[in-house]
Length: 218
Ligand code: DX5
Ligand code: ZN
Image 1 (cartoon, protein in one colour):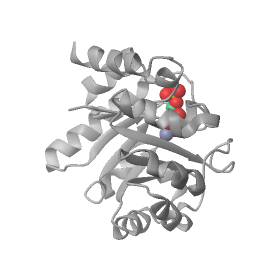
Image 2 (cartoon, protein in one colour; image 1 turned 180 degrees about the horizontal axis):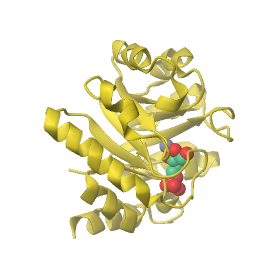
Image 3 (tube, rainbow, N blue to C red; image 1 turned 60 degrees about the vertical axis):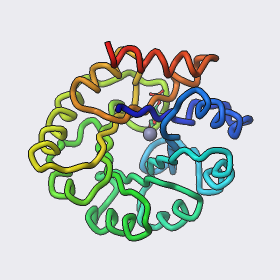
């Protein structure tokens, strides 16, 4: 079953709790939370305080995507705030294997993220350690950008490695996902779809989520 993870980056922040509840009711599987520090990416967004504030609003898993430098210094804070998954960028980790295990030791699921221009070989040696591989389908930093189709062949490659080694991590895509691009990603092997603007810019979140489900089942 393919999962859909609305990114709250495109939600109305003045009503954040209500927005989270709304996508939960509309059929979301995870809540995707984009954490940006103004260094790793040119934007500043959400910190652990906000994650903690919305934690009581839903029982859905919080999928926390760290777009920050030195992510190892903030893992405890996000675990404490209520993260269920914490994903770190390979481009931001000097000691990727260590950071992944630091996340796992807390009991939270660990993910590794690749920017569109980063070769997929960079994560090959940690595939046995992760619970999630997140392939960016835009350059991280902002919602509402255009899907980069070159990433499709990376999805296929990661899926092949997973099948060959009989591993069980989830394959997630993030950026420019709508009903059309979702279909391409699922055909390539993705099983979690992050969508921000496509879901939150539609007044009817259920309709947006359903249109993705419809398109990937055609
Ligand atoms: C981009 C973020 C995404 C973003 C996706 O840096 O990681 O999660 O919110 O937004 P859309 O779906 O609008 O491309
Ligand atoms: Zn994200």
